[in-house]
Image (cartoon, rainbow, N blue to C red; front, side, top):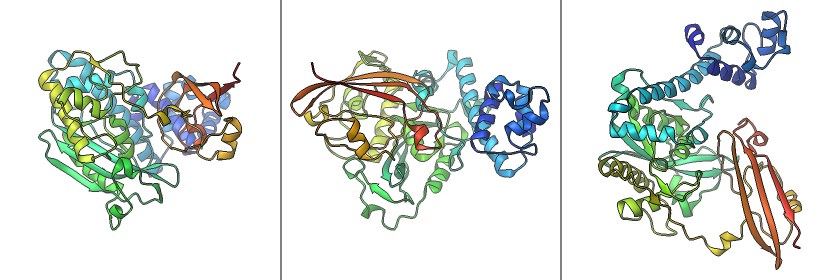
Length: 405
């Protein structure tokens, strides 16, 4: 471990020190500030920002950790960075002779939303980080499998995996399992997932079991395919560097940067069929097959021309909704009613989206008690922040309700 720390880049060392602080980790010289007080007699802990310290100081601190759990944690953080660096370096070097599959991996990595959507808390204990070999053979592998998952909402406000399907490029099923969430479920989202409480009775397969299966399927540099794949990886608690996201690899006309095409619309335009009829629940296996078919169509036929984004029909009742994102789940409904005036119902839906800074403005026109009200929701610095508490996960927002003139 000492050798890996000594050769790590500074940005990796900075992240490792910051994460060790958040976790309250202590080495043989204590915590970060304790270490600084003993290591640097001149400045001590007065200069405690890891980013402002030299790589030598950061490395010296990290080398003080000797506990097995701490070393495993640091190794996992370094593995995540190593995987991404290997993929990026290989992608940059091999553009002239890259395979169609590798080109789609590159298109995914180069998408502006990739850093935002594929930033995972991979260092957490229950996450699996696949090991990516630096050997050229593994990096040139064109083997692909496609995945799709279904999730339910649990009592703690988090989502849990309940079904996963994986197919290969021949659409042969490699994995199709129901998963016991091992948590109290408050919403099975049956209208979307097609899963009911009865379906999970007697199911013993766990997330850890699925991770073991995925690790085997993704060995030797296999590429993982999916539509909005980051959501599936989040549910699987899996960090894999060689990915193809079908919501990233097609060009679109007149579409905002952050808008993704639905799987159903892509299939209608490119494959000539609908994955599901309107209002029908998802079929995990069908969605995995559809993602693979889209990749194969892109490889075989190109589809490099811009595709028009289909404007999906939105029910009138949905048009009257004001969406407020990233409000901590512990905020009582009564408090929200004090902020949002008028006779309205409040629906709670929990969805965690991690990423870097993202700024957007949403302008909504509402009708409340037969009076026109302009509601302007300004979400600034849409931030990843700290994932350790509901407060840190919340987005900073300002809601201005302007009385009608």
